Length: 249
Image 1 (tube, rainbow, N blue to C red):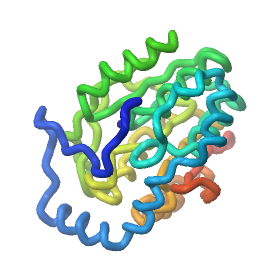
Image 2: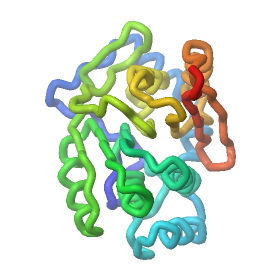
Image 3: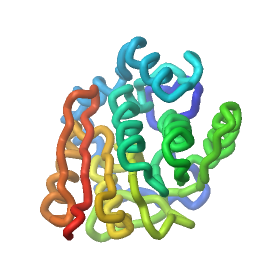
């Protein structure tokens, strides 16, 4: 949910177009939890070195100035490299991304280089949709961008979730980089709604996996989804959870 422009330190507020409100209890929990995970939030401000960024851009054949400053709420270089790794290895037909941004440009370019699959990217902020389409057009790239306001609830998870439309029936690679933790620290757990669409051998990537909220989400996914094998990677600044659907499940 970031464009090529610089991103502020605070997450953008929910838009007024039908966004569901969190309950008072959820809001209090979010504030209290923020006191616990502030060290991880500070680490999110670092997006990797300039050398790592330039190596990534060279790898996918993008101009040295194609990406903005990384960090803040943007992806770090570790996540971007790992996404390219997966596309190179898996040659996915359908990539679904929750939270548009710098990842969208890199995914679209990597897909064009490796198999020509399609990116389906969703974000709750309507103005980002046109901005993202224009950004990719600058590099002769394209993706299906969809507006997904935060209106959905799930009794299994707190917070509000994307109202998704036209999601592919099968998903080869799912990248979860939203909603922001300010909605609720556990809200990304609702991404499991899409797990049944992931093909055998398909991949789930959960960004910010070092944060306490995402660690709780990962623990529940490991318990509830035995058909996936989940691995935590801590080499980046924010942590990455990689889940692969077993081929014999």
